[in-house]
Amino acid sequence: MKRTILFLTMVGLAGASLAQVKATDPDAIVANINGEVLTREEFDRLWMNLSPEMRKNYELTGGRINFLDNHIQKKLLLQEAFKDGFQSQPEVRFLMEQAAESALFDAYVRDVISLRVVPEEESRAYYEQNRPLYRRPVQVRARHIIATADSANVINRTNSNATSMEQARTKIVGLAAQLEGNEEQFAEMAMMFSEDGSAESGGDLGWFGRGKMVRQFDDVVFSLEPGEMSEPFQTEFGWHLVLLEDRREEGFLPYSEVREEIREKLLEGRTGDIIREIQILTRDLRQVSRVSINRENL
Image (cartoon, rainbow, N blue to C red; front, side, top):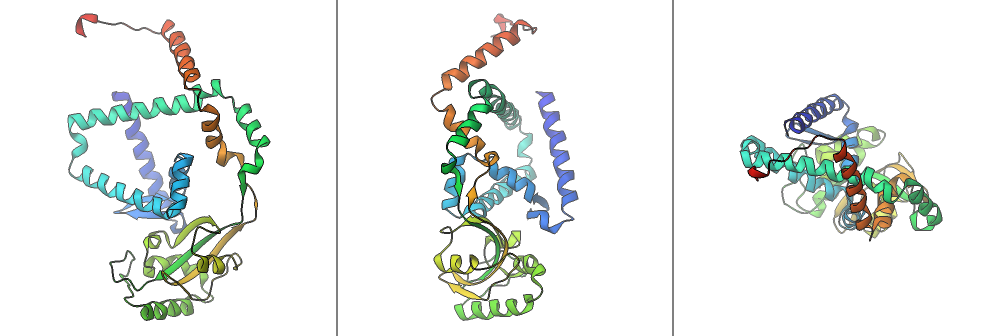
């Protein structure tokens, strides 16, 4: 147990050091939560660690921005718990140790034991035989700045907040004039002035295909070329300004992106096989290990 805690502490320190290094690169920062930096690399890892079903659910309900909002809520509660010293309570400490061991056990079964049941060759063969299932439509990566008529509190660096649709239009038109020819400042301006949760990440909307946004938004963003900024435009949500960062033409999702989804599919109904592999391995390990049991202390 002590070894587990030491390992997690070292990982935590390494992660903190990495975050401090990357904090000097604004383009690498997705969010800053009371000084705790979340880099794009770390966020991508969290996103890809979701089950395929969870990712699909998020994609239907706001995508990566919604996932980021939920992650921030979780982080705020965790920070409050640490501030109160909640993690030092003996019972909580015990639960944290158990959770760490369970996570390690699950990851080892998933990434090592399950390969004895579904070898990598079988997963890759399934991918090649079913490539049409993994066709990827045209996708874009964009940033946006939005101003709305909603008078609710906003999360941006200047507390800038339109309270009517006319104010929203005036605000976006003014920002468009400032950014014309200065598109490299778009992310910073989004952090300062945008009126939705994406402000914290410089207006980053991640990758998305047609149909993920409202039709008026799609029509504008999919008409742009990478590096091009839109004219101000209106949707049912308010006034927008969009910068298209990149575009992926239609193709196939790479095997690396769908590997876990395929493995989960091929492992369905084979829980018994995995359990048998665990039993075989633990039996072999026990034969070469020193294990003693004091039954009188049970």
